[in-house]
Amino acid sequence: MSEKKKTTIILFSGDYDKAMAAYIIANGAAAYDHEVTIFHTFWGLNALRKDENIQVKKSFMEKMFGKMMPKGADKMGLSKMNFAGFGQKMIKDVMKKHNAVPLPQLIEMAQEQEIKLVACTMTMDLLGLQQEELLDNIEYAGVAAYLADAEEGNVNLFI
Amino acid sequence: MTSDKILDAKGLACPMPIVKTKKAMNELESGQVLEILTTDKGAKNDLAAWAKSSGHELLNYEEENDVLRFWIKKG
Image 1: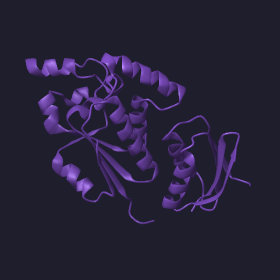
Image 2: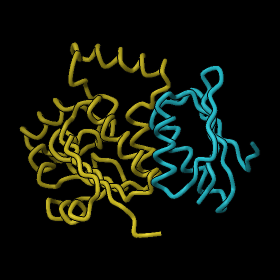
Image 3: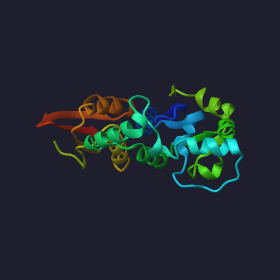
């Protein structure tokens, strides 16, 4: 077999539906035997947050950010028709009916398929997110590491 | 058609049929045949494209009562 193809995805959005699209493509690409990287930056970092309260030292601003942002993939809102969280509950019901895989399980599956999940350290600083608050077994990097993957990439998406 | 392994992916939505197919295929030897059952309408194009790109051969395809059935030979 020739060398593995690569798929790289930048997840910028913190919306449940957009993150779902990103993770479905990522899992599909892994099934295509691609080496897959999802680079999480800005609001996309929230998909990697643990859902529990983690005690870490933070400034006032960072605390405010931490409170206002969703704690984990399951708490993220929809990009359209969110209706203060009600829309997200509706879509989860509909997804259950159609056997669509919820976002937290898609992320779990991504880790099982050895998809590389990367958190952007610069935006982690901006949003006041610390490593302890994010999922285990992820990587931390910046633009250069992302580009190193992307320049050899066959599929590259910004979501 | 005969197959060496059957994967029941009925009721599962995208991307599960393709993810499960890939997993099941990993357990087969080259030349063996995997039979896949699914109800996802997109699977017809998905599995055909996946088989081609991954170096496998789609031997046969049937549709009966909303169940799509595929036979893919491992490359």
